[in-house]
Image (cartoon, rainbow, N blue to C red; front, side, top):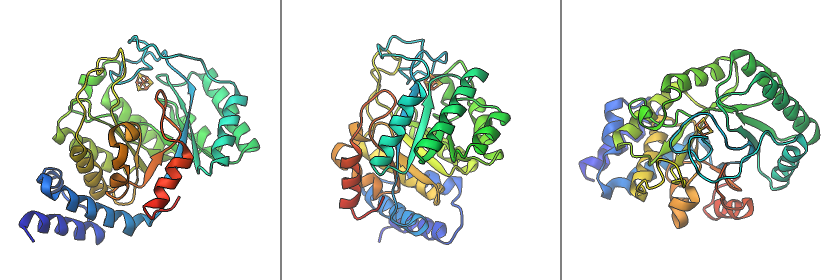
Length: 326
Ligand code: SF4
């Protein structure tokens, strides 16, 4: 076995024995030669199976309030700064959200995430959201998660008391790249909200987007910061360039780059649900199993906030075909 493969094995053994790999070791892992990526993925898969079993976390989203967001995130077609041409709407009525939750439950999907495009909820919007969550609890009975932007401690407590399990708030990118993609809020604003979520007893779902022009080392930088936050779930989105946004013509990442990130994030966060999220169908096409056998153990099904995705039926079939469970 060559020295590179021996190094990957050594790091794997370290993680399997409950130790953390260092920043320097993670940097060597993410930079292995192309020939060693398969081995890196295999070892990441071994770590996944040891700490998480064969279960794949499957979730659906509902975009409860779409577009016209006052923030200028350059990857996002929901920002009011760009002419992306998407249809926009205010907070959906409770009946529509309840129907979506019921459908997710009928499709055997385990959790349902309510997402709103705004900087953070106003008091009035937040009251309405709480009312909707209560109605979903009373009428459907599915695990409800939320992604509502910046929230206060009081809001986090209220969501927790309503039985919300997990709150999503992504770092989006690394600290050193963040200013290139957003000027209306800071990276630290995002870290602060992630910490508020944890501090108030909600599970944290926190990840980001790769393929926005950041370097490989900046992808690692984000992974290192994410691992410090100890999220229960980490979504990895792969940029799907959106018409009218500054990243419309961004070059695609190669499969190898995607596999490196997924594998190394698994070495850094052995017990986290590593969810391969937006961009999975478009970028991975016939290689979707490679990420689920290379460190990831979660997917979002049935489409995303502004783009379509696979149907739950097709995704559940794909998961069972590779010998994993949902
Ligand atoms: S990513 Fe979120 S905060 Fe940024 S523009 Fe889109 S909806 Fe708004």
